[in-house]
Length: 558
Image (cartoon, rainbow, N blue to C red):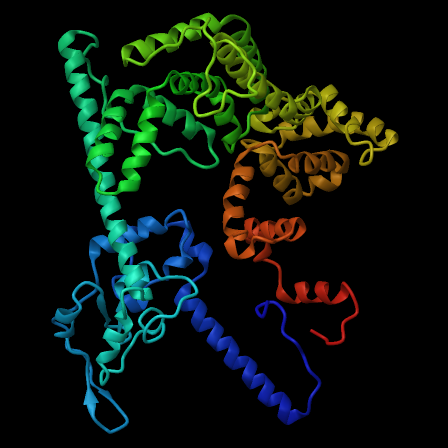
């Protein structure tokens, strides 16, 4: 808040000079802090791991990076190791007793794993604590080994104080470091093992003649981690799991016996037992089928160049395919699941037997057959849920509204233009268009489209954003005010899902563990300021101060 609001006090000339000097000092300190740490958004945008500074005094704190790339930054620094310039001649430093001292590179031999030296700051740092600094904890010897660096060369014992006892913050950071390194090695080992298992399967299938060999076929693949906001990544993960099911089961089975962690062995046993059930296979194929039907629609809505007409067609096609799957594809789907289970020796239940829920008490449970469980409670329920979601998101009114908006699109010389649809779009906004304005719009829109198609400035435009900007630049928004009003209303419609995905990603950063009691209005305002930072950066601070001051009477003038 200090950046935007600075209090102004009425004071004498001498006090005012002192106050101005104090403010200038604070501004200098603030600029130095910002120059060292950098803007978070600048750090987050594009990171070249090869260009990360090795000098610990020049590094950006790990907490200033996006949480999604922090592990990548840690891995890059783990590969580099601690910064230990052993051949550097360290400068001498004068202490209170007029003695000259310097950092001794022999200290690296005493603390080879974590001690770092910064040539830029002539100070030493802790490698472990930089990578895994515990939050809200005191370090032995203070935070100088992390933030500003330690340079009191007369007190080497402070290094051992920093290390502390077994439960110290430094040792907790060391444990996290070792776990991180071991985890990476285990993950790399398991990924290599997974690829090797799949390679052996492909070789065996080729020898048996089950698959053909040709350029571009049987490419190497591996499991992919799904993203938090893109359903397409979930679909690709399911496809890879189906293809690599046998290899995945083998690797999980090896973890149950070979992993050094008892907890991970237990988790692997539970996961293995669940994967080798018909319920898991049924769920795997059902979700693959449902997400596959809506995959093209999902990709269409995520593209920046929105083709609303085709997107609405894909909505209709998705609904029709889901309904056809519900009505006619149960038998074929069940055969696919049964064949998959037989291939991997997974028991297929008799559909006429009574369903027995796993891990639940049989008391007070409704007796149903396996057929009812898989077909009604599972197959029909998931499909109905997806159809209902599409109907809620793309109702008849919403779909018609979006098709009307598409008629404003300037792509291909306004090829989607339809006067009747645009008049209908005006009628959807009775508070913005009076009946007499709609009548005037009918004549204005025809003059507008002839002008647009004959004007060179409007050739090659892509999307409503370009159209609105060009209308303002050419002053056409004053010539066609009703059309421009309709364009601005269309721009605020949340058609694409890309903005929503960015909001979900930003929400994890804005509303974190320390702000978990943030209210809806405050959260909404904070997200707008965070997401639209490019716009807010262009607003002068004095405008914000005047706006804040005019909201209500305040005792002090800002």
